[in-house]
Image (cartoon, rainbow, N blue to C red; front, top):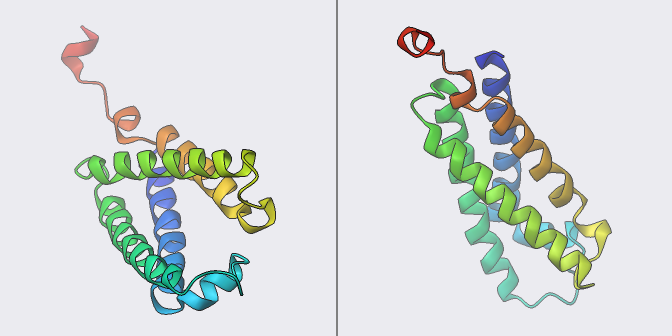
Length: 136
């Protein structure tokens, strides 16, 4: 296993987070349309989208920081794993209850699985060299 796979994964996640961050922060109405919420979504949904977009942008920055030195920034990686697990579980729960149509949330089903798989497979703890004294 190499650090290259982890750095690629972190940068890929940063790009996805940046895309959604820009979309939800600067075009919340378009984000609502993309999710199929128009025209029935109340106006305050855009406020939530802007707040959510700011967090996407923050995690995009965090993933870029972590990609430079993953060993030193494991907290960014660990919290991204936790966020993606919660996102996925919430999506599945709302789908199963019938409150969310599948066609609106395909990316919310697929991306968290890819992100968690990549981040756990190439997690810095798994990539860390084994100290010589531990092998003796």
